[in-house]
Length: 440
Image (cartoon, rainbow, N blue to C red):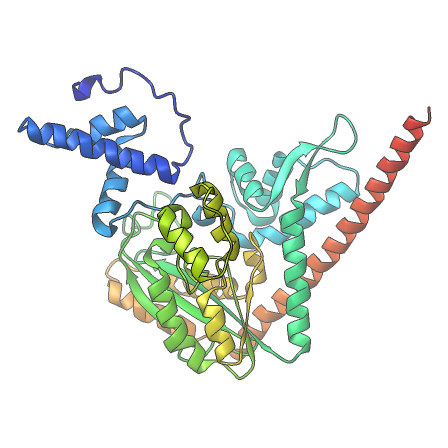
């Protein structure tokens, strides 16, 4: 089959749906067969990717990525969620999150339905952001909201998922208890800065324009930590990001993070600290790094036996995988290291960057670096500007950032209580209505 005919028939597979483990192995096997066929015929192998993509019903890019990852690591890339939700870039800035939540709740309290258009108008009026309606909808989904029918007929409303609210409330309860026990709260995070990151606003005369470098250029990745009084001394790590085609998380991995955690963070923490971090994949790596779906059936049985977990000979692999998943210790290795050093570790609730004060630090240092952009600024000078911006962070600024987070925590705590009371009131009304209708 020629490459020109590979797109004649459309794939019956749903487009945009992430590939499972088994599907990725199937794609790899199809590619190997196509490659062997072409090698045996002594023809060029450049068309093997296209042929494999055609037979598998996926794009050529997907085949190339799977094969490339297999050649480097000996295994296939792990499955991802649709839309790469955890690392997805958005026009909606993080500091808008608390205002969005507050706006939706207040609208519901007033008896007003809240739609994506209302949120779009809010972003325009309060933050001067021009955000497409579809982007607003995707962002609301990432924050844990759903657009669905209200408890009364013919009304649509945005409702936050119960799981997201409970996770947030549990976190707020835990961090309040930790503060009362005298722990120093330390927040950590990672970010990046492009070579040509600069301001776009200036004073212009007629027909004037700002001649700034095109594109974004290379980027510096960095990781740091902040406490109530200051940035943790000697904890800043800056390195060049090599993978520019992906989100900045592609430049970080467990080895980079664990090395920084061990050598830069732990030795410089105040006694009795509580480390707060988000749920990035490389933060949550456990001590025993097993992927049950990739393990052989015999290896799973052996692991279960060694850990005194009962299983039966009649069990097929899916049941064995489910069983081992329940018994694997998924505690992050950094949490165990923190405990060894007399510290605690707390995980931020999902979709809540506004609860991390270091996000305000990122905004400050990037803005300071943006002011210094010029056409002849070297990449090394950008790094020096970045370090200088961190050095200019005063104790008072850190206190202000921390105070802002405390205020946000209190607002969200009260919001959760009010929503819980509202839900209980609604449920009681529904039960009364059902009882009334039953006795009619």
